[in-house]
Structure formats: structure tokens, C-alpha cells
Image (cartoon, rainbow, N blue to C red):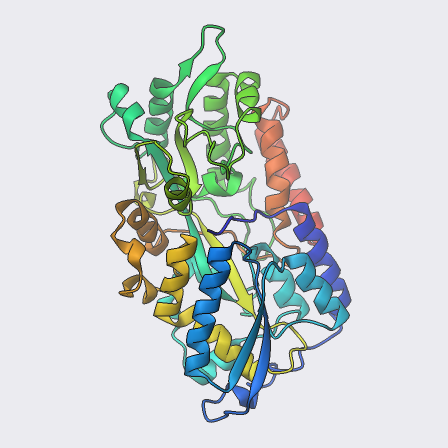
Length: 449
């Protein structure tokens, strides 16, 4: 199953280097119109090279199965798939002029750099040629696959984030339903938490400490309706009261545990992607996580009796309940590809064919990225109520994502260290701290404040 890649410092370095090296270049195809190979009437035999990041044998086999279906539809197009190709390899190939015909990435954070630099080709001429209805892709998903009005990638499977909770521990605490508001989440956390005789944490009702598994700023802020960037691309954390509300709620709960005590508990957690994950073993009663956790729980044969729900939301924003954060894989046509028209046929098939998306989703445990694919009879996971929660989050009109930026979403890279200092009491003035975070974010983009 897909393991999410978070925005990291390397994303900024890669994106910045790419912009520097390619801004003087223009795309060799797709800038003035679609390549002739995109026409269904063009059956010229071609061989495409396709890079993707999947490594697990089951996932690689699923990709091969979908490519077989593509070849049956387009017998004149042969696809050589290369597994385990990450963004550093993609960016190196772009700088060296050796890019594949099609490339897929787990990290949507680099979309802004690829679009603004011309590293990935503009897909708009091909979308227009095929009269592709992008409305069949949710708005939040469309947002993280384009930048500044330019669509240089398409979504290829998505992640949605919700609440996992331990039903046995809920029953023991007398809690009959998952919390819907942040006040209810804090109250449930306190009822579910258990301490040892030495006052250390035995079971955490919830993990509010930033950096603990999937507890990250970008997964908390949507519950408060926050907007990371202004329309002009500058950072918005100090101006948007949602960030103050989210971080205040979070630190209040951290303080209830005791920040140092909670940090020691967080530091003791087993690897997130191991069978010893603390939720699997009953050491965390509730946590924010992605839809793929269902597949891990099943594959690890975890004994925990659990259910899923949307993340709770700010008490004054009940209209947000049912929504959440969404992100995911992207795929596009790198600059310099020899067969952009045929490459588009592959991109279109992988990202819009309902059955192809369903087959990949069944294996990876991710969410197919079109509304049509969610109705595919081949989507066997659709009958799982714990997965349905994430499908519904994915479709919710209030679901949001993090916007693309030319620096590889450095505002996210900067936000986690800030939140870590804040929760440890090292930021005495939150408003001033957020203003400084804004200045840091804007500096990454060369924007003054």
C-alpha cells in the first residue's frame, strides 16, 4: 500500500534547483498545441518509459496489470515501467535531459516547482482536445495537481485523513460514539487516557503532539477551516484566526498531558508503518491517519477492534464535519519526452479510466481519484464501512488540501518545526510567532513582507 511522503526540506531544495535550472527553457511539446500522437487516429508504434515510485511486489504487479489493460486498448504503444523512482531521480533526469516519457510521484509538494519551471509539460492542450471533464475530480484534488493556473499533472490515487478509534476502549470508557467537535475530542481523550503508577502515559486517548505519527499541522488545520496561502501566494497563518484556534486547542491538550511527558511517550512509539504501531496494540485510543491504515491493520492481522469517522471540527464550524484533508500521488509528462502525445494517452488512461483506478485502489488501499471510479464494480473496497468513511471525506465539498507553491510547499516544511517549538512552550507569543512564520514562508518564495 502507498506510504505518504510528507513535504520535507529536500522538496524545497529540489524545487528551487529545478526552477533555477529550467526557467529559461520552454517545453518542447504541449505549449502551442497537442502533439499529433495524442490523436486516436494516430497509431504510430511507440515505446514509452514510465517511472513510478511503487516498490512493493503487489503494487508493482498491480501497475503491470493496469499497463496490460492499456496495451490491449492501444496495442501500438509499449510501456516500459521502472519502479522505485523518487522525486530526486525525476529532478535529476530533468536537469540532465534524460527524463522518462511519463513520471509519477508520491509527493504533490513538488507540483508548483514542476509547473512553474516547465519541468512538466502543460496538459491543458490535451485536456481540451479530449474534452476531458475535470469536474469528475473533486475540487481539492484538482487544486494540488496544478499551480498558478497551469495544470502540469493529473492525480493518480489519493489519500484522505480521518479519525481511527478503538471500540473496546471506547466501551470501557462509556463513550458511545466518535467525537464530532474539538471539545468532544479533548474530553474523550481525557477519559480514554491511562497513566501508570509512576504517572507516565500507559494509553494515550489521542496523540496531540506534533510529529507523532500523522499528527501534523496540515492534518489539524482543516478541522478549523484554515487557509494556508493568500490569493497572491503569500503566507496566511497570522491573518487567519483558524491557525491560532487550532494551535491553541492543540497546546491546551498537550499541556493537560504534560508536554515533556507526552514527548517521551511520542519518542517511545514504534515505527508508524510496522505491525507494532501503537494504535494496532491499543496504546493509542484515537488517532488521525489516512485511509491506507485500514490495509495495514488488515495485513498485519492487528487484533484491535476499531472503527473510523471523520475528524472532529471546531465547535463553531459544524458545517465542516464530514470533510477533511486530502492529498496524493501525481503523474505527468516531463519536459523533453520524445512521445508526448502517446504519453498523454497513458496519463489519461491511468488517471481517468474507472476500472484502472479501481484495480490500483484495491491493491494500494488508496482512494481512486475520480468520482466515476468510486462507482466502478471493480472497486472491491467499496463495501468496507471503514473505507467508505474516507470515500465520503474525499467527496465532501468542504474537503481541502494544501495549495501548490513554486518552492515545493516550504510553508509546510516550516510549519512543523514551529509547531514543535510552540507545543514545548518555546514560543511565548503565538501571534508574533505566526507573523515570523509568515515572513519565513514568504522569504522562501522571494516575497517580501
